Length: 209
Ligand SMILES: O=C(O)CCC(=O)C(=O)O
Ligand SMILES: [Fe+2]
Image 1 (cartoon, rainbow, N blue to C red):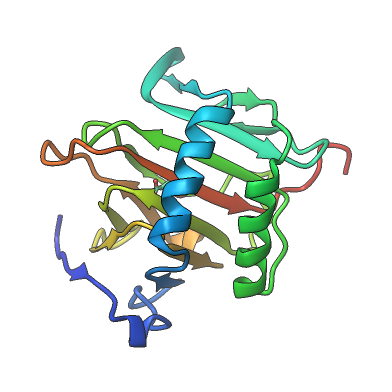
Image 2: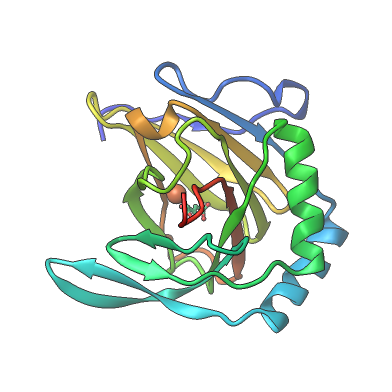
């Protein structure tokens, strides 16, 4: 890594752009209260059909330790890492959170990918959320519940990195053209034993359009 900085946004400065160029990302600590976050986390763990993620790597399907659920409006199935996911129906709790993030971003979301990281050994490698089904102009809204984890951006050309801690109840909003110029990752660590759930709300083009 060429250059690294650790952001920990001040609540008063929550609209400061985390990226120096080629994208806009805003961090909102305590977007939901710790009480709501704990309640939501328990509901999501207990009620959703969590599955291992499957990725295509060098032509082979590999499964991850991290668990996922894909939620979406009808006809919002989604292909990523070369594998097609069928979406589950929205729950009342998720619709509530979606509404709050829509108010914050002044955008609409029709799908959500949930990731369950059991502990610090689960993470997500470098990628950008730029699949062809995604509306590239829509922001991506990411809500974090549970353990604080380090999230990093890496510029696709100059490879500079910027990282920040995603705290319990926080929201991270990535605006266009962030996905075009930056990769991001959820870094692994041996130091964290607690679980975390991340929800990324997205806007995809329905299958029949
Ligand atoms: O867990 C996170 O904070 C990142 C998740 C992510 O990048 C994704 O779902 O595409
Ligand atoms: Fe992502």
